[in-house]
Length: 172
Image 1 (cartoon, rainbow, N blue to C red):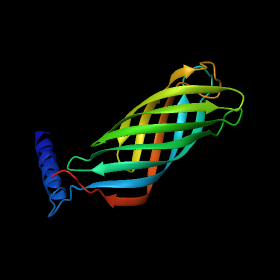
Image 2: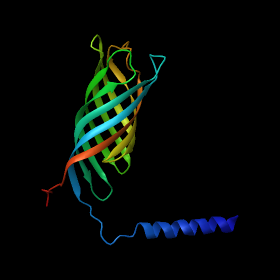
Image 3: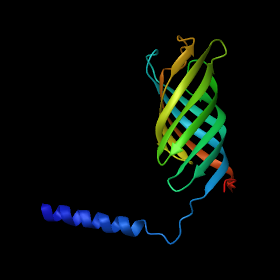
Image 4: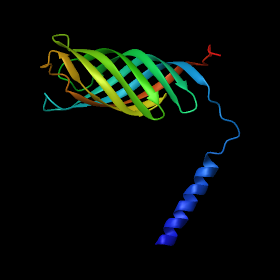
């Protein structure tokens, strides 16, 4: 058993060394304008059923560097797929990225055109410049009894670059 463990360790070590050897590595920062598309699974109280939302938006992302960090900000909207009434949620958002960690927040106003609910949504998850998988608890600021949205969301979002440019550094 110990021989197998040592063999697996050395195979992993050789694989790691050979996989990450590069002649040249660019540590540049890039700025891009993106179309954002996503899916949200909405769960929790106050409803006895879970909801599904599609998200679409546009954002501006700055990302890169030696350890893969950056930030993004944008606007978008969530559209309810299986809600009783047509439900939309215009939103503004901002995110910070460091390696594979994503943190951020959104302000969303959900409405079914009869009632509305304003929510602050802190966001934490994994991802980077092109995608993110996040957990989003909702902090209800107005109308806690809004029936078309629950208080927790798991969201998968993908960014499709429209324009990507190397960022010009002004510090010397």
